[in-house]
Length: 156
Image (cartoon, rainbow, N blue to C red; front, side, top):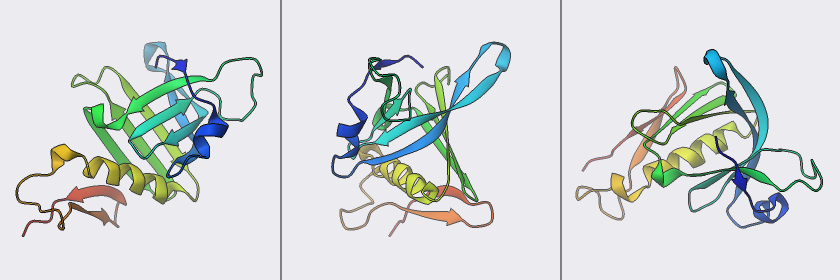
């Protein structure tokens, strides 16, 4: 994941409709090894996911805030899996899945993160077609046995 300059965390988290939290982000290393690092994650209403390198406010004074910006509407695939109080999100930017970002959320806000990410993905314009009217949006259901978030289109 390439890092870029990011807006200040304090400013972004005070915006309306923004969801802020801490997640573990997979850091891939050579020979198939990886580690999970806690990082600050911000989801904006426009579908922009900000992944900050540092999750504590004020860490590394004098260091610019850096991280990665993921636009959910530009992703090739997004898989969301929820088991108990753990949410795993896998974001793939291309068909060959060469650039994959894996996030792991834990705690009480897991259902909120899962629903917000899932509902954003379902509401993309490309998923709407002539069989759905404005008053009949796409729906989804939760498989309670495995607790995987799944989508299903409601047809008339």
